[in-house]
Image 1 (tube, protein in one colour):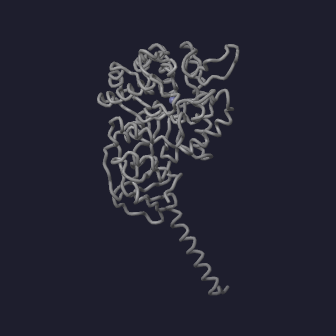
Image 2: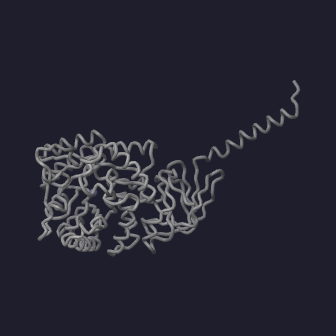
Image 3: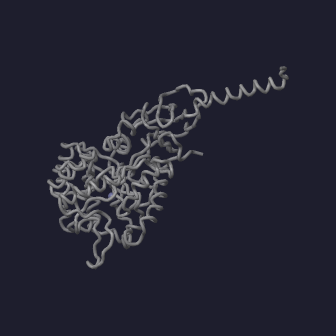
Length: 429
Ligand SMILES: [Zn+2]
């Protein structure tokens, strides 16, 4: 059995190629990211020329000048500022700006069509740097938010990590109950009508059964329910009802987000144990004090209330915007835990950075605005061990922007790179 030199060479090269293929394969899940500037929103520290080592979906190491492991894929973001993935804790992925004008989408669109729009919206929001979103009700698109969340988690379509609330709880005549229709016409409702404690409890069970991560409660009405003279919002729930909702949600290990403009509705929501107050632009000093005392988070959604059309630009709306700004400034001073939320869907998906601009315009430091969308929001979601900072062991949710957002907050509108759980969804050119 004599081997020819050629077959020996072939055997050696085959061995070599197996060896060579194997070496990088060991590090195939490793990615090294070179950062120009790395911001840690937790302590405000900035590291120049940091390297992040990502292993699979998690961050393995982070620091200045780390050695790049052999065989690791290298991503060069040395011309950018690198930050943890942003978190928007008030979104409506199934809602589009056109749904805010004319007849409500429950009447004009199928849930299937809204889902298709939602898929496109989720991609746009992810590409704008939002790697996690708490989606605060599908506004009549049923459980489509659950389907989209699951589709994203299974890698079928791209999008942020979603925490969804399906239908919300409201009352007959309240917010998200169709108005202005002939009472003989039966149409689908944008939220669940729950007019008693028992109805609320039963509805929470149904929503959790079909996939809700959060319970959304309409504790006050909407703009049409605000008294144009006193600016008093319509209170929709008693403190006992909120307690019952929170208790039932807790049984299923769910938290409650309360839409509440102010007045007794907001105070009842805070006293009853809601984890976050949404909007809150008409809250009084007592409500702000209660937020601080009870450690309740406040999601102001500033930008969505600024009138954009002549139709919206009413005297009442302008007064509400002034109040919103005042409450925001008082809450900042009082030490309220302010979280970033936008109500995106009421305006174009992918443009949520505008909320940062408003927060800073109203006097918040850029670093605090960044915290509101990272560390503080991760606490609200009870996910602070997973997301919110770029730290060893956390999910590799990493974005890069042009410029320095600590100097000019508008940099957050220039997202060039998005990684979610170690996977790249948008790359710089
Ligand atoms: Zn909303």
